[in-house]
Amino acid sequence: MKRRFLLILAALLTGCGAEAQQPSVRDRVEAGIEVRLECGILVRRYGFRQGEGEVEAVLTLPNGPGPHPGIVLVPGYSRTAYDMLPVAVAMGRAGFASVAVSQPGFGGSTGPADFVGPRTFAALLSATERFAAEPFVDRARLGVYGYSRGGLAAAQLASRTDQFRAAVFGGGIYDFAAAYDQVPLAIGASMIAEAGDSEGAIRFRSPIRDMAGLDGPVLIVHGAADTRAPPEQARALARRLAELGRPHELLLVPEGDHDLGAAQIVSPAIAFFRRHLGSARHPGEGRDLSESRP
Image (tube, rainbow, N blue to C red; front, side, top):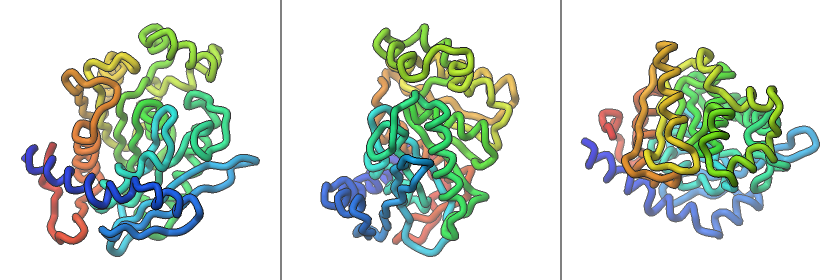
């Protein structure tokens, strides 16, 4: 089963996924032109104003009629919504609509960056609410996926709102104070420079303390050899979820560093969302792939 699923994922991330990464596709979408990829997936600019600033977002819709289960995609440090296009296309080919959102301070989202603080949370929540209200999205089947800083953001969204029925946290930190003592000095300095060290700032960036608010199961993916976001953060979160009796899975990738590959994070995420957000069909094949497991 694992080999079969990875072969399917390889097909999802090549061809149409490679096409999505072409500069011409990004240039057209940034210019406000809808792009229909060869596999039928639609890519559209989805940015909006937030107060006096801008939030950069990219919408990806699968082929076929909706409403579709939806995924909010949150990239990590220095990454943008456009960097998430290969993941968005993989989700689209699995039958999920998605919106990828650049965090404030990165890409076209107005900064400064605040290390996933209140400004970032507000922007992501606004994007989520806008996306959930679309007629082509089944708001009863929403998931959130985030990696690195995006993992922290996804944990905040999943635990502090009632929007999401499943969540995937990858390579994140979930307890700010504990992480500060665990990460390399340069990363610790960035944490304090962006967030400050007040009690409120530390608490806001510690969603491990909010997990009672979850509305669905969680998949935690982390490299076992990650030196930028220590794997103890993932283990601590899993322990907390176990204490609360919340359904969760912990996937520690042996020898995996912070930059996990698609087969290590995207494939289990797609399988997880299929299980918990309902069966999705692979456009063009017309058969149910929900039995595939990583």
